[in-house]
Every structure is written in C-alpha cells, then in structure tokens.
Image (tube, rainbow, N blue to C red; front, top):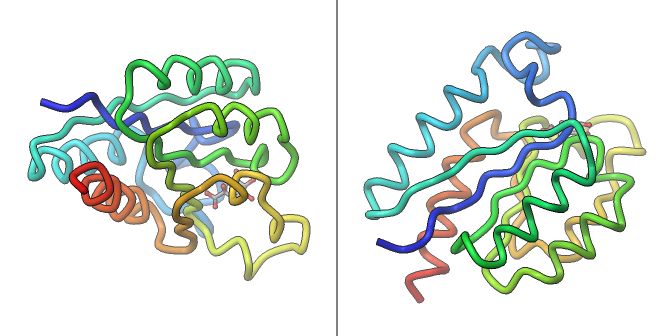
Length: 146
Ligand code: DQA
C-alpha cells in the first residue's frame, strides 16, 4: 500500500458541523474522515486527517508529510489568506497538493479571494461543501498512479 494521503485542516475547522452551518454544512470532520477513507479504500489508499488552530503545528505536519505522505489535501482555513509560512512549507513537499475550501470563497468577502496556498496547489476545489475533500482524494489517487 502507498503512504497515506494527509488531510490537513486549519483553524476553526474543529467546529465543522456546529460552526455557521448555513455556510459550512452539518457534517463534522469525523464524517469527512470517514467519507475520505471510503473513497481512498476504493483505490487501495488510506488517509490521515489532522486539524490544528495553530499555524506552526500545520507547518510541522507538512514537514512530517515530506516523509510520511503520498499527497496533501489542505484546507488552511483563514491561514489561506495570510500565511506565506504555510506556502513555504508546502513548497518543500514533493508530492501532489490539493487545496480545498468547503465554501465558495470567490462568492464571499474580497479578503477571501486571495490564497497564498494556490501558488503551490496542483488543484483548487471550492464551494462543493465537504464533498470537495472526496474529490480531492480521487484526484490525488489519479496523480500518484501516473
Ligand atoms: C474556508 C474558507 C476560509 O475563508 C475560512 O477562513 C475558513 C474555511 C472554507 O473551507 O470554505 O475557515 O477555508
């Protein structure tokens, strides 16, 4: 079996399911993990889901992924729009990176329209709700089997 896909989630996403459900829906991160594990298993792959409210922890986990993961799916939350440090960390990772946003950030406030992470991401998914994570798993499966 290949190394797992790391699914990294930034600040406030621990509250998924409770936080502004009209924007982010009712599914929890545990639901996301179960859905992604099922999709990954169809391709004989696995996932490991992480969440942190701390930028440095997200960066440390990206560094860990350099050895331990075949690809990264990242929803950096608000760090998307602020963090050069997360961009720099992702630039040290050699496998595929897919950026996911549950909401359609382009339909929202203008400060959400810019993403540092998009400068590294091989693909960006926004506005598919939590299904976006499953689409990202499928895409990483395709990219790593090439
Ligand atoms: C988000 C969008 C960000 O602008 C916001 O700060 C989040 C979640 C999304 O998944 O839609 O925390 O990344």
